Length: 114
Image (cartoon, rainbow, N blue to C red; front, side):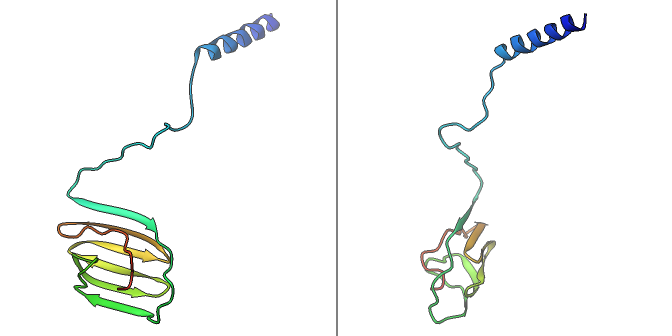
């Protein structure tokens, strides 16, 4: 009787697994993760810039590529902090992230200390 129950259970498992189809993985294309908010954000590894002779750099209303920032303070090679009206950019040992809205849309900088 136990053998009949075991065989029935094995047969049920084999038959049910033949009917079940599943896949673990990702799609072949990257998903579209669009957020429609009045702001922007990014994260990137930009690396530690080469030593340029300046260890501490600070600016008030720096302008140029940093349009919209109010204050920028950087300490080589540790990182830096840039503040906008409503937003910020933070760099720690080359890992950089920023988010902002209302006149401040941070992005990766070409030259971090200019």
